[in-house]
Length: 353
Image 1 (tube, helix red, strand yellow):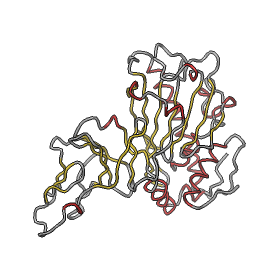
Image 2 (cartoon, one colour):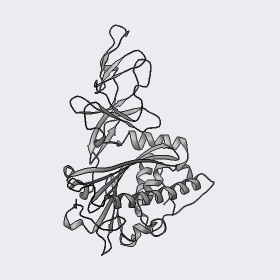
Image 3 (cartoon, one colour):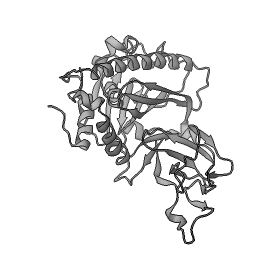
Image 4 (tube, helix red, strand yellow):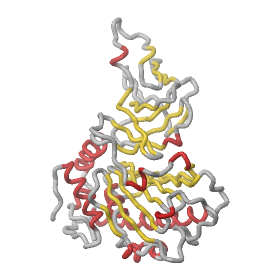
């Protein structure tokens, strides 16, 4: 079933702009992956439709959120989506103003006497690690995001990234989260997933602050979620007590996680427009798991499942662009409803009961 939010919540540009301000900038959001910023001078662009933000690692290995626009005449400074600056500096291609990777103004040719360099840097907020992601805070957060216990206890140092993919979906970002928050659609949309983790054996966790979760049970003959359902020698990354379960969690506002017995899925959702979202998906496995331990079975399974979700969310966005009215929550969609209430509480626009 569809959310009681009106269709304008998924199509209106002014509503979309408010969400960027109130749900992302004012809250903090998953902006990048620590694995993409491993060395001094590395930088990555943060997809944001109305700003130019990058995360950069300086000479001292600290991370910084910068606005990649010269403070002199507003010239865009960096090209592309990521790179490495061997000079550990950013130089303007117009009048050669120069900045370090902490955002401080180092050189300002032609500037008037008395220009305060400290007031003309690039810093746009700060960055803090959360799991394998980096959260950007354009304004100071009131508190760090909380985590479900199964993620808080995860030994991150034992993991390595096995895969990273990026794709775009012609659908509003909230539709992707709402879809993630329920498994009622498994039999219709994901028969392969239903065969491994039946939706009727799932339940939602909706009372937490800053995250929402879901727990699914593996069928008796299944060891993990893949095309074969077999571990193939991959090292477990969870305690024995959790190896018959799959734990999903949305971490506000845009990070989706799925903890399997032997790997961790991470999805960052970057809103690009009311009807378009960039997804960055990553797979993390135990460092002792070799590449030939059936990882292709994991990748193939999620390629298919993600394509199925993409197709159904794009069809839903097409419906939202019509004169459609209405929508109800199925009784099994408590996680979806909880997410909508989180959104509404921050926009001061409660959805229908």
